[in-house]
Length: 207
Image (cartoon, rainbow, N blue to C red; front, side, top):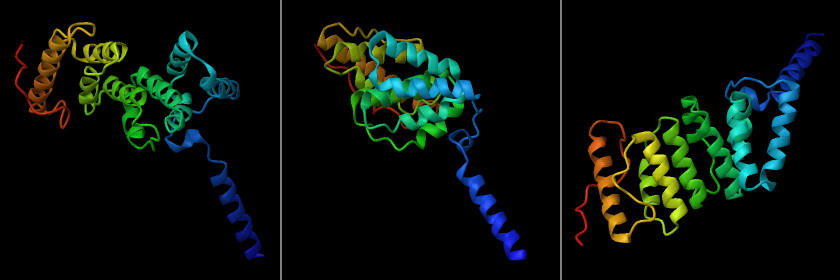
């Protein structure tokens, strides 16, 4: 009889473990059945959306907040760069600093893709983690003007400065502004704000 009860107890424990949902993993708020369905529908649609619709989805996920976190954190590991970038962008848009640690634990599969690299650095910065600010400064040197503009907007949003960097400016002027950014980051490392971010100070290029 005792063995029978022990067996039932073991089965109950296993069932409990098996039923542990995504929401329990990080102790986020659990969505209602209706909200869960909405989140899952949006997750299913995400890879097939583009442009304004994709931007609206990012805003929607950010507005949902905690109940969407487990789904978005899982999407960060998606092998499709645009999907992973969208997921991390939505998490960054929440401004919830509790997401920094879970994001550091994500098993990124597309972190070398520019879209993911810059969106991830942007998300960390928006969540209060300045460790990847140097990645955004690297983005100022991109050959793509849109990437340069996005990285500058992210940097300016958090620092309130732009060091006179013009994404559409002449190459020499942009290079000089990037040097100012790198020197500024190096100077702030001494304050502990951007520890181990950026590169060492360098001389301003001469015309």
